[in-house]
Image (cartoon, rainbow, N blue to C red; front, side):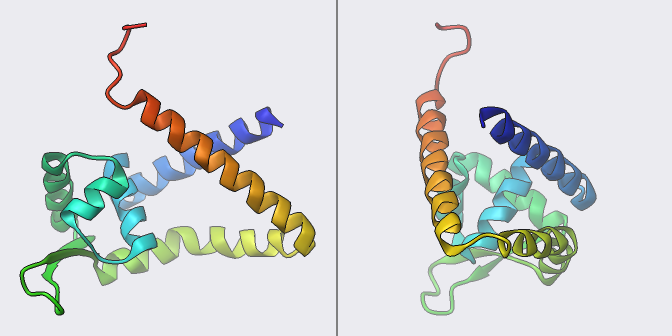
Length: 147
């Protein structure tokens, strides 16, 4: 089972690397695009938190994404003091081109499971996510080679 999970993580890593190349961005920028795609428009601070980056690093990422035509800063219509980062139409179009077929195929595969099986899969994925998040937090700020 752990080999299957590792194989899935490795395949996801390859897909993400190829998607980043297709978009002509780096993996950190891709992670931020993913957060915007999942959560919708966010402030720079919210995006930094969601992506696990510092505020300074986030400013650099947003600048790169704007230059690539994939994200834009816009004033929040409800609160003109807030500036939101959002995906551009180009980013949405390219995202659909890259991940649309992946999602469609996944839906077909998931359709082969019963509701009870899907509940077990969802429970496993929730536990796996929690595990990954806890260990990412454990390693945050860790000094390389410090034991």
